[in-house]
Image (cartoon, rainbow, N blue to C red):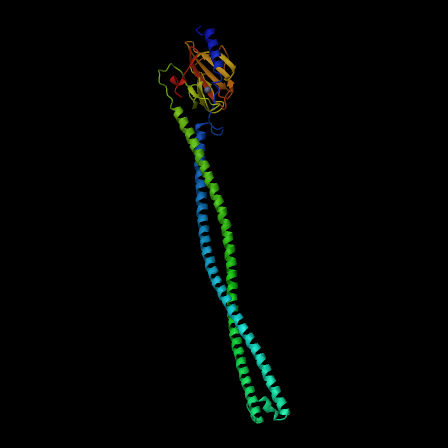
Length: 386
Ligand SMILES: [Zn+2]
């Protein structure tokens, strides 16, 4: 039997020594473990992006409309404010003019009062002189010795006073007419101002309303923008994942075939060789096999005819089968959900040895497949095209 105990020990030792490296890590999200899942995700993201772009452009055009309305309203408000302010000036001017007229009227009325009182005293004087001796008038009216002349003089004074009074009274009437005219004009202006103020209040409330709508739209706009950025980033991640997956599936056999069959079809999620430690994301470790992912429970077949030398649990490898092909080659099938063979059994190429799972140190269902030559792991891609 070419499968000697030394070789078995070497395999087991190596398995233990490399058990940490054999932790098979699938660097895909749990919702996208296969190529078709990734394609589906990519399609979904594309749709989401289109939707977000549509919403964003709708909100943008809405907010542009609202902005234009705000500008228009602002212009109307400014125009009315200008009108109103010039009317307020006009009203103030009219008020000043009215106040000045009031002063003039007041002054004239005082003068009239004085004039009346002067006339009254003239009359009193005349009345008194009609009662006393006419000669006494001489003493009063020094320019004349004639009492009749003196009376005449007093009458002249009285008439002059009366003319003055009448002229003052005319003035007052004119001023009052002017004042009434100005007061009417002022009332008209005040009414126009009031109407403009009503218009202003209505425009202002429209403006405030649109302004808060505008703020809302801006908020929505930034929400959709960041959504879009997030989707774009996810798209880049998924694309990179797809690229990586496609690249890994391009691994082809470069050396002669030694009759190994593909143990399971699927996508290569981790190739053989040095790689960044999948657990820490930094530092290198050596991956002793090749990882192939397919649906959980997919049957795994013997790659070549041989004898099962291990069928059971192995640290790191989980449920694991090792086949000795009895010419220095051995194959390892790890992380299975169920084992279909027994140790010591002879098995032919293509027979089911177990089913895909994620037992041992695996973060998702896949097959960890190794080909060993004299116990040393070698790159399975040299022998099997996945
Ligand atoms: Zn692996």
